[in-house]
Image 1 (cartoon, helix red, strand yellow):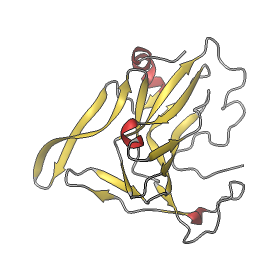
Image 2: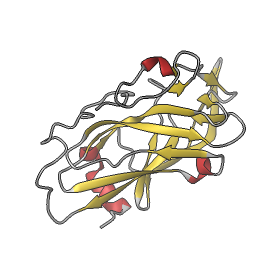
Image 3: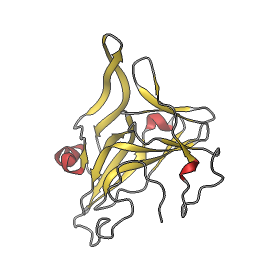
Image 4: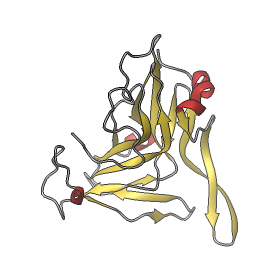
Length: 202
């Protein structure tokens, strides 16, 4: 059964950190020489039936054909990824740009520890979906721990901004009436305890 905001608030601290029990829609602006008030952000924190995670500043990479000729999941070449420029807007909000029809890897601010009787699914937020961003992640399996790597595709014909420390995707939690027999941790999953962007492994 999908879990509500009540369940998320009751269990949030043991499943993910940092945990924000409310939905945040405004954050402090930064200006040289003092306080500049607040500005509207892409929301993050607890929602009605999910939790909106944030994109972290560290580890963001964009696929580029400059140094590599193909992407092979069995022999991943890190030269196929480049570190883009981190920009700042007039409010002090930081963002990366994904080029038109580009593909990038990012990582969540939040670190997860999924219980053995819970499966989580991550979906894109509507604000970004309306701009052409496709968020592709795999399920957060029972027993998995780590920061979530986010696969981000810009399907638009223009560069797309993705803001760091603001909402990027929503995680939905599903609880079973019993724990799984073999968890991700039990089978020593290859992406266990990842702390940043982790490349494809076999």
